[in-house]
Image 1 (cartoon, each protein chain N blue to C red):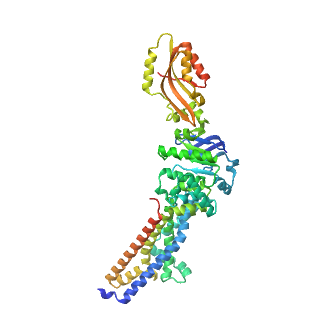
Image 2 (cartoon, helix red, strand yellow):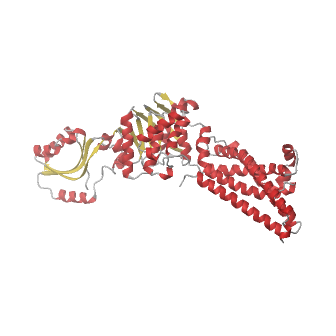
Image 3 (tube, chains in turn brown, green):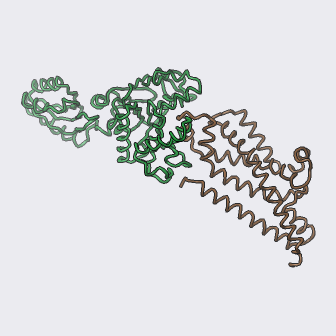
Length: 222
Length: 343
């Protein structure tokens, strides 16, 4: 059984893990850069928000819901022209990062919106009473107060992206999930499949623990 | 310092304020008391325009806020400190950082912020707690942080919205003591919103009673305490100065009334007096001068704003004409006398 884990196979594991890391990290970070402002805007324009604006809120909310309802495997192929425009190719790890980012952004937007909603309205009122501008309310009150929640949401996003990234094999994105499908399933090597799952379990555990630790460090509510 | 003219506030169908006129003088502690839902919180938020009134004018420090553009309104709000019932401190900031927040928002340089925060923490007695987070300090300490924060930009006016309602009686006294000290030391005008008459009694110079969106009574605290006019005022004062007599007392009075000696008259009276008059032996005087009997059956002698005041239920008995003359003399001495129903 162990003979299947040849040095070449181990190399493949290492490069697949690296591909997963790259896909998850880049799409997580770029997705946050898009998703956090979207989440803030959703909160601000919501009913009772500082910039209450039903039209903007509905449109933005509609876009977020539309992307989130599209199954990832369909999103992956549906946006191939856009992916090619961004990365110059429709296959490979870089190409997989584009749909992963597009899937991550609205997910993060909703998680950020929820975290911001948890911030006591009294704090916003206090800031307004001090003469804060909307910009100051966002950066001095809302985001710092919601930071532990946002980090917890970011952790959930990274774990979900790890799952999504397994589908990236469909466009040649590589990664651990792809390795499991190609070797474990299509070549009937169940021990490879098992090894892939074990590595992913350890990977997700590590991510979650790191996230939990960060939340504990950041939260001063208790 | 603060003038409200014809303030109306409606939220959809619900009318919270229906024509409030109010004037707060510089350097005074002005109390606004009412039950929950009377419109107090709407009213205090009107003063810094966190609530935009449906109609009316808000003038603070000679400036009409309702006509100011946004940027200038933000400037104006820095001159109005606000202290909240639930403190509203940022959980992500330490005590010192919370106090620094309004200064950061106003763009004060960091070195100056540090100096001012130290001053403020000394003032409220929390210098030792500067690096704690709000979750690590007590309610009274949180409110001290809230007060220090409200004072950071050296406001002209401090608004307190039920600042002591979430605190125990002892902490309430110490927070009110701090507010009074700030009022005296800096001549800061303070507007206190509360539902507790105890708070008004301890710190306010003048008081307005708000009921169903209207000011039903206002005046110096001592006057409102001794001569409450409106039913709402009476019931709010009840917790400090009992307005109704207990049934046991009334039963004794009825027994006394039923065996009245011939040629004598009996009356159950409420006597209220305040200020310097309360020091003089007014009761002994009338007893001696008219040869009547007075027995105190119920009552309260207390101090409001450093002035003695008393509200007593007195059973009076004497020859018919003497009793009337005695009441006239009491009234002449500035005592509020009214007959109390005892049936």
